[in-house]
Image (tube, rainbow, N blue to C red; front, side, top):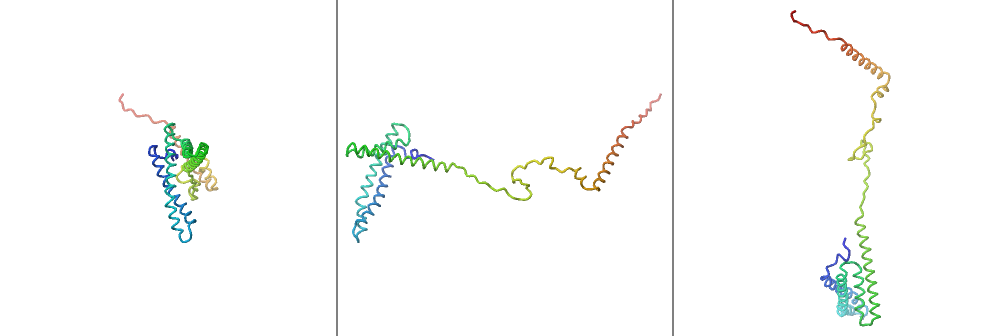
Amino acid sequence: MGTPETSREPCPDRILDDIGGAFAMGAVGGSAFHFLKGVYNSPSGARLVGGTQAVRLNAPRVGGSFAVWGGLFSAFDCTMVYLRQKEDPWNSIVAGAATGGFLSMRQGLGASARSAVFGGVLLALIEGAGIMLNRMLSGQQQMPVIIEEPQPNIPGYMGQVPGLPQAPVSAQAQPDSSSAGSGSGWLGGWWSKEKESESTSSGSETKILESFDAPPVPNFEYK
């Protein structure tokens, strides 16, 4: 998000842009103010005509005054940008003070100084409010949104979230066949004893057969 200084028009075009915006602001605001004032001050039966006449007489004057102030402010602002070679709020503050002092020069040095201080303080407040608002909006946009999804309570997953690698099952958790067989009662123990005896007997026969020597190969050579 750009700052108020960087989001404005470049300097040559900035003067015309500010003049037009200030004239429109003064004309619209002055029209509303003087229309209500004319309606209030006019006699009954001619209030609408009195309000319209007040707008026609005073709205262009207020718009012109705003346009002069906006044009001088932009001219001083562009001058500060040219001299300092950078855009920051100090340009606007100095330009506001210079504009207020320049417009009050015909009333004397004291009035010009007071207008310059008033213009500088007013622009400092405006710039400070703009910077604070800009930081608040940028902080809200950069804040990440974290949405916590509840784990599905589905039987068969054994407490594991679908889509994630499951923890390996330890060796102690696997059932032991020997312990299972021994705990199945006297019938399971009897069958296990028979299997053990068969395995030992088969192994002994294999050992006995392997212990015999092979018979000699007959030789048919004539002596």
